[in-house]
Length: 311
Image (cartoon, rainbow, N blue to C red; front, top):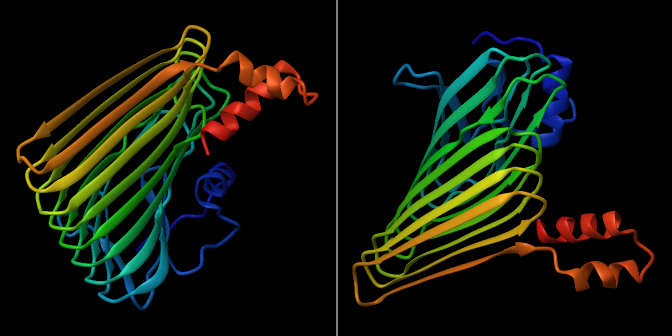
C-alpha cells in the first residue's frame, strides 16, 4: 500500500471532522485527494482494498468485537479534485463498534472541490453500530465545495445502527441519500443536524423499508437555514410488517432562506405504525427577549438558540 504524507490543510480538516491529533488509535484509513494517506488494521478490524476493483476499501469487523473504533475520514484539499470512494462495511454477528467517518473539502481557487462517498453497511444479527460523520467546507476560493454522501444499510435480525451526522458550515452543495432495509427487531436511529448560509443548497433523502416484525426506525433532521440558502428534506418509510416508523423535520429559517419538507408513509401491513412530524419557522421573538434580559445582545441570543437547537 502506497501512502503519502498529510498536508497541513488535510491535518486541519481531519481534526475538525474526526478529532485527529497527529494519530488515530486503533484501525483507520485516511483518504486525501483521492488517494490513501495512511491505513492500519487491528486484530478484530481488517481494512483491505475494495475487492471489486473500485476506488475505496472494505472494513471487516469480526463477530463478537466489543467497543472498538475505526476511523475512515476523507479530505479534499484543493480545487479541481473530484473524489469518489466506495466503502463497504461488514459487521460480524454480535459486534459492537463505532465508526468515525467525516469529510472536509477545501478550495482556494475558482475550481470545485468534491467528495462523493458511497457506503454500504452489512450489519449481522445482533450487531450494534454507532456511525459518526461530520462534514465541513473551507477555503478562500470561489470554487464550489460539494459533498454527496450515499449510505445503503442492511440490518439483519436484532441488529441496530445509530447514525449521528453533522454538516458544520461552508458546504455549497450536498445531496445526502440514505436507504435502509430492516429485518425483524432491527432498529435504525438517525440524528441529522445541518446549517446552510449564503447560497448553499442541502438535500436530504431517506428511503427506509421495515421488512420484519417489530423493526423500527426513528429519523430526525434538525436544521438552520440562513441567507438565501435552500434545504430540501424528503423521507419515505415503508412498513411491510408489524413495525414502528417515525420521521421528523425541524427547521429554523432566517433572512430569505427556503426549507421544503416532503414526507411519505407507506403502510403495507395493518399493524404498521408510521408517524411524521414537521416544524418550520423563524426563531421565536420571546426566546430572544428572554436571553436579552440576561445581558446578551440580539446576535448573541440568536447564536445561543441556534447552538442549542442543533445539539
